[in-house]
Length: 146
Image (cartoon, rainbow, N blue to C red; front, side, top):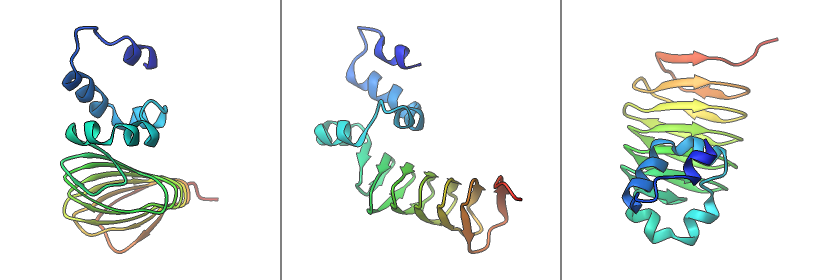
C-alpha cells in the first residue's frame, strides 16, 4: 500500500491526494506516512484540506499526540501519547493512555490503557487494557481476560 501512495497518478492534483489520504487516515498515520512533523511543517495547507494536528476541529481528520486536549465535532480522530479528546458525533481511535469523553453519536475504538467516558449514544470497542467509565448500551469488549 505504501508503494501505491508513492506512485499516485502523476496527473492527480492536491485535492485528489488529500482526499486519498483522508480516506485512509488511520492507515496513513499507523504506517508513518502521515506524521505530526509532516502536518506541522505544512500546517496551513493541511488545515485548508481538513487535516489537523493537535488542534480543535469540525468535519476534520485530527491527529492528537502528547498531552493535548482537543475537541472534535463530526471528525475522525486518532489520539496517542496521553492525549485527551472530547468527541462530539465523531469516530475516535485511542491508543496508549489516552482519555476520551464522548457526546452525541460517537464511535470509539480504545486500545492499550485508554479510558473512555461514554454516553448512551456512543458505540465503544474495548481492546487490551482499555477502561470504560460511564454507562453505554453499545459496548463490545475484546479485552483478553485471564
